[in-house]
Each structure stands twice: as structure tokens, then as C-alpha cells.
Amino acid sequence: MSFTIEIRLFARFREVLGRETIQLTLPSPERVDEIRKHLQSKYPELTILIDRSAIAINGEYAQNDQMIHEKDEVALIPPVSGGSTSAV
Amino acid sequence: MIRLIHEPIDYGALTEYVRLPNCGAVVTFLGTVRDLTGDQVTVALDYEAYPPMAEKKIAEIIEDARSKWPIGKIGVVHRLGHLSVGEISVGVAVSSPHRAEAFEACRYIMDRFKELVPIWKKENWADGKTEWVHPGSETTRSS
Image (cartoon, rainbow over all chains, first blue to last red; front, side):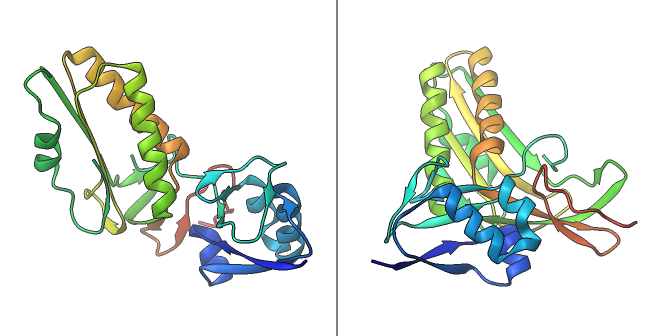
């Protein structure tokens, strides 16, 4: 039973893709790492950043083998600003 | 207390918030927008957050700190939006009976904040270029 998920975008993703969310239609619940591959094939110019980003499901960092279901709130979380390169 | 705001941070109020009679030590950390990163000159930073997850992660970090040290109160405030050099982007205030724990807890909270909380900044460089900061995914910059 196929369904569409909405993935929330932030920071460089939001800037490059020019939108706050993108949609992915899935044939059935899929693993986080499969979602990552879908995104990389859809947006090859963002392959590396997608690789380095976390995926959050309902506000929690998700493991690669976690499943994404219909109605999950999914977000693409690019690396957060930490360490000596940052302003603080 | 956890706040994500779009106005200047009232660090006096933040400090007052954590004071308690049994806490002889109050430590308030302020992060501000710095002008130089290496040889690049910053004129401003833009901060963006995923607010519900950011607040959740900050709450988890606070509970984590409480499990490690005797803490009275904690206040964490992060400002979002466009901030010029010198403006305060984040405040963390911690009270504890004694100063060693107050310093350690405050530092710990700030260190974990930068690892876990979904808040991002975009550098506005003096040459007019802008760049979202994502460690490990730096874009090449021509100078």
C-alpha cells in the first residue's frame, strides 16, 4: 500500500532545494538507509551532504535500520555546527 | 527553562532565573558571534532551528547533566534569525551548591548542545558570500 512521506529540510538542504519540505512516495515502509539512497538518486548533487546527514523520525535521531512508516514526521538533519570552526 | 527566541537574550534575567538559596554558585555562559574564523571575516550569522526536536534534545541534555552533578536550576536560551558580530546567540545558566560542579555542568551542557541540537548557522562573510556551516561537508570556496 503506497504512501507519501514529507521530509523536512533545513539549512543547506533548504537553501539548495529552495523549499522547506520534499515528498517521497514509497511502496511500503522502508529503512532509513533506503530513504537515504532514494534521496541521493533524486538529488545527486547533494550526495555527500546526504551521506553526512542524520535522519530524524518524530524528533529522534534514527538508526540506519529503522523503518519509516506513513505518518512519521521525517527530517533530514545536516551536520550541526559544533567545534572550533564555529563562532562560539 | 528552555527558550528559542528571535529577540536579544536577556542574560540578566537568565542568570536570575537559576538562583537558589542553596546554590552558592551560578555560572552563566554566553556564546557570541565572533568576527574571525581562521582568516575569514564574519559580518553576521543566520541561525535556523528544527524547534520541536531542538527543545527535546536540550531537555535531554539538561536531564543528562542533572544525572551527573548536583544542580539547582538550568536555563538555556538560543536566539534564532540574523545576528551581527558581537550579538549573543546562546546563553546557558546553571546553579549548583558549589562552583566546581556549576562550571563542569555548564561546559558539559554547551559541549553536548553543539553535538546534538538541530540548530544551524549560516556564515555571512565580509566578501559577501554566505555558507551554511556543516562540519565535514565544507564546500570549496574560491577567495
